[in-house]
Image (cartoon, rainbow, N blue to C red; front, side):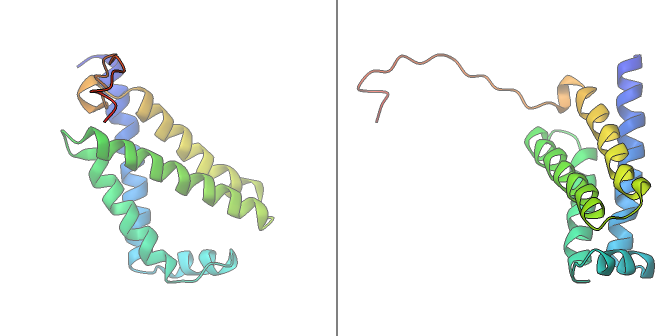
Length: 136
């Protein structure tokens, strides 16, 4: 295993462990998380939606041979973490609460950039001449 692959699995494993735990805590409506969601002005039922999305996203990142699904998972986690950071910022919470989601976003970005070729989405677009036959 080369250094890039080790880095990928280290960052991906760390991220999936954190997001998987957060997803489960959302699903069981952990009291501390309920207080946080309510403090941000969100309804508690949103925890179930986010919990399911996080658990499914973790599964998508870990299973092989699903590059398109992985792209969606990376995008979904990006939106989740940016939204979490912005929500804490707009609620005027302490700086660490604003920064922590961005730290996890940096871990996610590292995972994304170190992905092995087998976990990347490939486009095989070839130039196509526009003729009346290809325009229909």
